[in-house]
Amino acid sequence: MNDPQSPTPKTVAQSSVREQVYMVFPNDLNANDTVFGGLIMAHMDRLAAVVADRHAGGVTVTVSVDAVHFMAPARRGDVLVMHASVNRAWKSSMEIGVKIEAESSAGAAGKRRHILSAYTSFVAVDANGRPVPVPALQPESPEEKRRFEEAQLRRESRLRHAEDLRRLRGALPG
Ligand SMILES: CC(C)(COP(=O)(O)OP(=O)(O)OC[C@H]1O[C@@H](n2cnc3c(N)ncnc32)[C@H](O)[C@@H]1OP(=O)(O)O)[C@@H](O)C(=O)NCCC(=O)NCCS
Image (cartoon, rainbow, N blue to C red; front, side, top):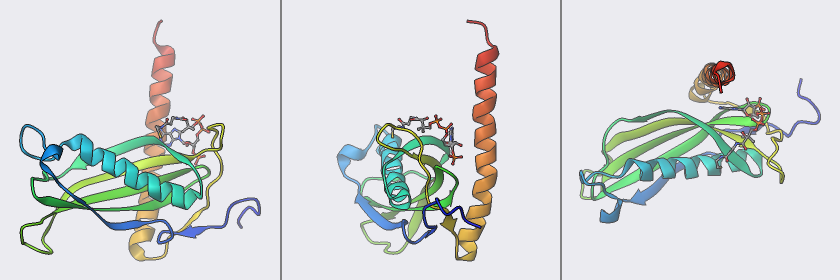
């Protein structure tokens, strides 16, 4: 049963961003003539922040990013096509999955290359930067339910890793 104090649960569709486009220009390229990875990561974080703010219904901050994978380069003349959605929400934190594809603006319509996949974690905060509760997520489709279950495994592993690091630092001299 839901806690009566908790915000009303939300669906994935209530916050997700689909088909957000960005046209690559020459000043987006690195010395290798492919799109600068940091630019793509900035897009990833902005997109995920929009989804997190929508789901939380307020201000959120990025707390961690895990498993950023660049699958293929984006190039001059490409259009980046970006998608992001909430995979799961816990007490104050949420996992947002981001996928970025690229399509050539010079023809090959509909043919997309997978450029990036990433999982980002956001925490909803109050005006003093303290964590506040977020709505639970109600996954609906089989795909959303699969992501929901997988997100729990990732959360356990990322929190265990953060705790291991804290313990190691605490045990080191100085
Ligand atoms: C995010 C922040 C508010 C969390 O504060 P905190 O004192 O660590 O709070 P808590 O320990 O209560 O953790 C709050 C939530 O974050 C989660 N969390 C903490 N560390 C995490 C990590 N490394 N990865 C994923 N989630 C994490 C906790 O599990 C908890 O989730 P839950 O409430 O859903 O169970 C604080 O760490 C912070 O302000 N960080 C800087 C954020 C920032 O500046 N981002 C970049 C600019 S937006």
